[in-house]
Length: 217
Image (cartoon, rainbow, N blue to C red):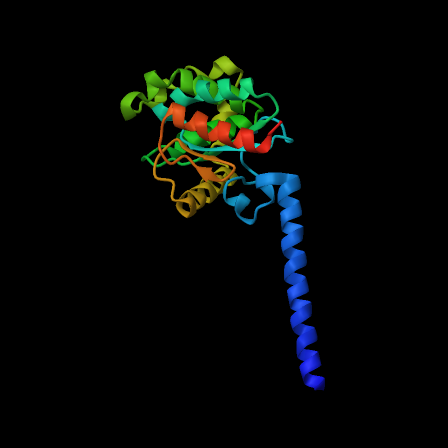
């Protein structure tokens, strides 16, 4: 009888722990939303460039390549959606340099981040992309003429591109690309939910659905 009581006590303790853990997790998710989920780190790493309020409840995660024409085409569209919903959306950029040599373009924009010029550099890269990366006809030497426009120290940029920390960022992002089965750029996730069918309307619908869920009033 004694052993039965001990066994029952252990079972009750385990069940109590499971219930408490489950309740705590639900409370955390309710309070912090998507970022409280266990797999959130696959989508948002400490090194990930972000744009938008830290209090935003909708995380738009984009796996991108600075040389990707579709990424450049979608950038103004994403900005428009964020402007229409101030403080509610946080954009998180991740890298998926699938094509040969694309790592170098990621290294450029990451080296620019060391000078506090990340978003300006990415913007000028997208705007001049038809000159240096049209239809994957990459001519990276033509990109350098545009970079001084955002106030970059080009010599420092070329040196910082070789920082091992940048290579580690690319390595980690590509590992997450594989884990999340991202097949092409741009690859979008909204609060961890993938964009199943690609297109402007489809992305807007996915974002709006999550906005309505997170901001019901």
